[in-house]
Image (cartoon, one colour):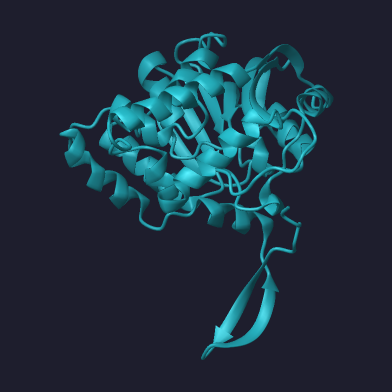
Length: 298
């Protein structure tokens, strides 16, 4: 069991502890995702794909920059239900490296603005946009989804993919999203949600310990979305899809005698295997599952 402990960091001088200083929650979340040399790691993997920064494609990058269960498959499944119009101005909340934003911009000719806490992900994502010559269609900015630097009624639609697991104040999150969307806009949530009581096994891809894991149930999501002013259109539990996806992924890695040049291991490095294994185990126990929710701002 992982006890919830205060988030702190220590200052040492000549190996002597000087003081313990509280760490901000946002910094603790950002630090969890910190790689330290992510863009170079992605570029270093390109020769194994037979690609360079000028020839790499969106499909080549998908295994590393669609950081959610099911990757591109899950993105396609969600997009097929949204019917965003061409040239729509979309919002990507918790955009990570911007993989979904680049895919949507290239496939559907949308402009996408993404926001994420992790500065390294934003810097890396913007570099990937330049590699793919999509910087004029996509804007990725560092910031908090709880206080977004966007005007009211700005976006025609949007989505968030595996974001809420790190955000406790989902009421403010959804109120902010509601504020920046235009009336009539459709918004999609694809998050890992709690399905039953029980202690999770850590670490998992979104948290090293329970201190930064802020799971909620599907019912709680629906309640907070409704309170923010949204109308629920559809909710879909994707448990079976996630089990099949990981079974296929495991079989492919075994058949290929190892992971591909780019993948979740690129992001999470040595901890990738353990984090994914624990997440799959938690899904298998029925404690968590990925869930889609599609809502509309009246």
